[in-house]
Image 1: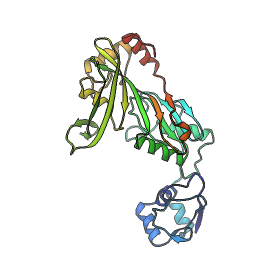
Image 2: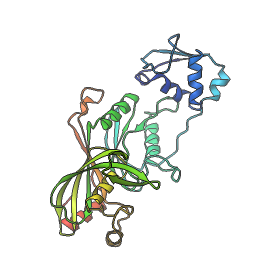
Image 3: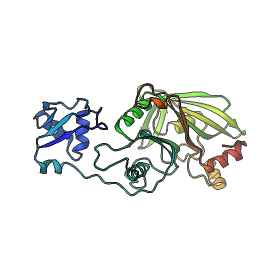
Image 4: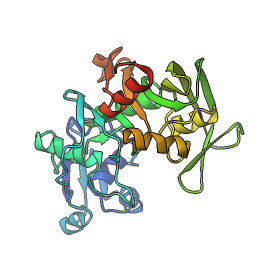
Length: 321
């Protein structure tokens, strides 16, 4: 039998989610079977798994030590060089600047040098993350590999929950800067249904039976007769949303190899060495209300544009970043 006492950083989560992290190599079906058979108890009582844990709650797992150990896969940490700059950091959150070309999470084709691994190694080196913890710090918003800008991560469970709530309930405003092909004189919105086809290709449609609703707001800042500097406010957050939304109004993002103009992209690659879409998440503003993160309310955090983007914007529009 093993006994576990819930700590301050572990409270506030569902019992079954805690068990899945603690017995991280156990099938979900096994966890629920052990709950039904009362081989796992919460405060000496039968539990279903949906209970919310409190500090000092007592968990007892009535299995052999060998069985328990067999269901715990040892956590490791990758020695990953720091591939981000810090925009803001406190005891709860980390706002970092992700360069274009860095992937946020591992996928089938990219397993190393991810932003997630770099953040974990950074916090591990500071003593703010331990491999013995059931909780792992987590990134709460995502950017495409070739989009640069601000990414938010929670250092503790409650911060992660509040950041996730903030993004889900649109309590954190997300602003982007981009340069698009063509002249856009007036601001507006793009809304529609977002869905994927042929793997990772996104389409936007008016069919209410398709995909998920998305809303993008855009405001032109300046144009030079050929290109327009734009500010984007992302009201929802779906993959490739800005890029496909701008394409839908005939103003594709410069450098976008998937939805953009190949000839324009070639020109910018040859003249400026631009090898990613010129799309940058430059600002987050918090309106999260009474919570662990209420001290961030009405604060905005700016992530400076990459030097190359500033050079392009200066050359095209005469504007300094």
